[in-house]
Figure 1 (tube, rainbow, N blue to C red):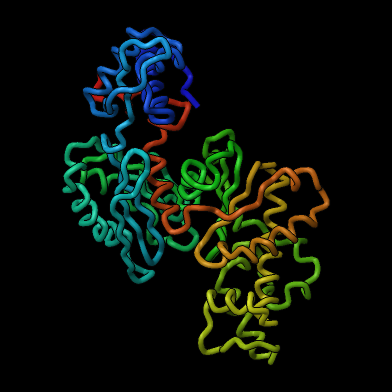
Figure 2: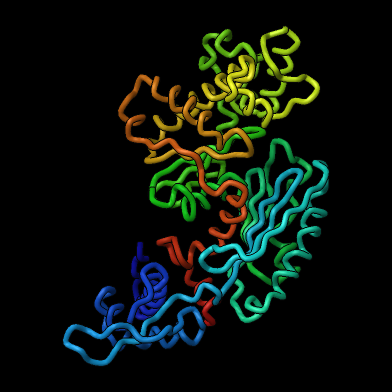
Length: 419
């Protein structure tokens, strides 16, 4: 979708430049005449804009196109140059982090991962990431490209003005560390901070299985649970940036029959407590101790083992995964009935990408008493998997230049060398 035009001569000119750039990015290669016709502005204006975009290397001429049916001079075709700029995407978790270098199409050229103990200070984690970014900046094509920004996805509620974690339930010691300032001081590149699940949601919306939908929910299932929301193509954060914190929903009357969740439920108060993959392991241990029929080995339990055994029809493992999927399904029903999205994507660390697990969730969702929103939604896996966090971070960097209808003129002018 093209950005809306602003007011005033300078605003209109800037909007036209970016809209032409986006048009070439989406539909190129195109000629100047095609741009004038499709975008409905004069050939002279198009030529002036293209001259500027060629000068900053965001557009390149790639040769001649076909002449018209009546003959005449062949047009010069124009193509977007994704290597005119670059972005750095970072995803930081409690015990590991990923960092990647991408071009303007969010194509990953380099990526690395580090691991560290769970109680590692956040500043130490950031300093461990710095050498990888310095290495990326030495790439030949990067040296002549524009730095679009660094995006950082991290757990917790974010203070966007300070660029730090405002509040985190499980990472209290990371609160207040000035992430944005540390990166900008080190590299001189504008840095954007976002909650990890919101960043992943944004990545799925722009580059993953949510890219064809304007209204979607992303549900992250792993060691805990969280949701991201996209409304009318834009990430919804809420007044205090805490939209989607579904892990704090109280189970309340949802557990009407404790026997239905005999292996997982143990007095848990919230969805976040019970929908932890650790609870699956605890449930397996409980079943083994009670001599329930199973081939699971109490000395060698993992999420992957439980899921694998479940879909080999191991009785205990299958009951565990079915209970887990049912609780996820209950949460999905509430999200669907509240927000009425076009699609609900489920992603995470381990269990989320198993298709049979998804089928169990769909079975539970179909039991909802309100049929219309359930029939309207497409429930599917997320698509980006391991790179979702870094690509979401890159999406945040590129958003107000290439995606959002709301244009940040100050940033646009800074990137394109305008005053």
